[in-house]
Length: 117
Image (cartoon, rainbow, N blue to C red):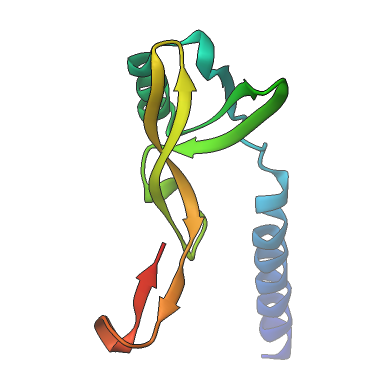
């Protein structure tokens, strides 16, 4: 009986240590980078929609600018949601989405909380 219990404990330990290490061995998913001012607004929206999340770069008053833009809140971290944001494109300003951390207002909403994003 003790031998079976010991074998079981070793097996459980092996499985748990494998599960703990597995996420660390996965490759980081690369995120594409684009220069928004070299693209039409339609192209900017298309790459964001098709890739889910991208880095868009542009220049403002000679300073390099960049940001992470997403297709939906599913690409945001917990506690964030996708909100409209404007980036320059070859044809003018273009509205896409970026992740923003939500604060909570205790006065309204489900369970007395309302997210402010």
